[in-house]
Amino acid sequence: MKLSFLARAAGIAAMALLAAATTGAQPNYPDKPVRIMVGASPGGGTDILARVLADKFAPVLKQPVTVENRPGASNTIAGELTARAPADGATLLLATNTAQAVAPHILKLKYDPLKDLTPIGLVAVMPNVLVVSANSPYKSVKELVTAMAAKPGGFKYASSGIGSTQHVGGEAFNLATGMKSIHVPYKGSSQAHIDIISGEVDMMFDSTSSAMGQIKAGKFRALAVSAPQRSPELPDVPTLAEQGIKGADVSTWYGLYVTAGTPRPAVDKLNAELVRTLKLTDVQARIKALGGEPGALTGDPFAAMNKQEFDHYGQLVRDANIKAE
Image (tube, rainbow, N blue to C red; front, side, top):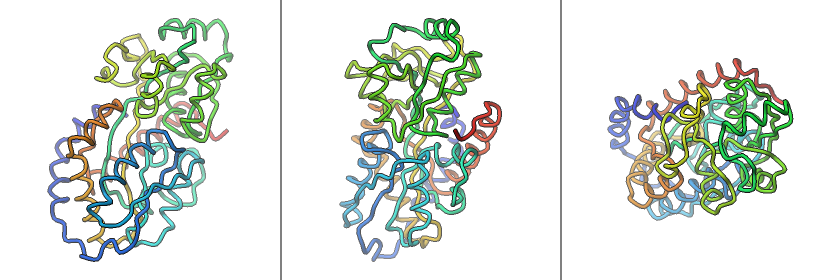
């Protein structure tokens, strides 16, 4: 999946916004506190975006909106909890394509992410970025690949879990370069960062939303952006394609969901609130500072995009022979 899918989806984005405008939510929703489930550890990109939404939603919904972190199982623990929650709109999920499009092809899940969750809208899209420790000797993708070729199987890459976009990015890189690096899964990006910084693990194909803080702090060195174009926040970091690596682009997208079966008026109210929030200048600035772009799809068009991504990553998982470890 590439950032350019936002452009391809422009034709249905207008339909999504029109649908969002037809809000007729029951006046008593929500009548209890709302929680946003996050399948990753505190401090990562998903957690950051969830807290941005919680801060903006609470005053309008007139209820406390809290973030609940349930990391593990490629973000699917949070997804399962949301799928099984009462269908009253009090439990939301901020998910990534890890749980919504990749993990279902690798793990045996106890819920169907396409049927048991109702899509609210696309929150943001972030390119993934190949990073190493600031103390690493490798200053370019060419240097890294040369070292990997000299030591087959001797390099390790971190991810936030099996089936994550970081995992898929690492295997896509192996496939594109003919190398074989070893996957080291963690329960979240923030935990993986510790071992990247120390040099315990050689590299990571992290989302910019998660890695940007470490890059700006001088703890990570960014070698390449895995997107069709450079990130405006990392203008001096070339893309993988610019460095001769084709077919390894993987980005991370973030979407908001609610338990399937939630009454339509509540879904419409959440839809409209997400549209309003993503138009706020400070929210757009926050997303762009993380290296991404605000989402522009809601409702059925977002569900269609999710299904398209589900099929796309299913093929990539098969091509790279990615399995649960």
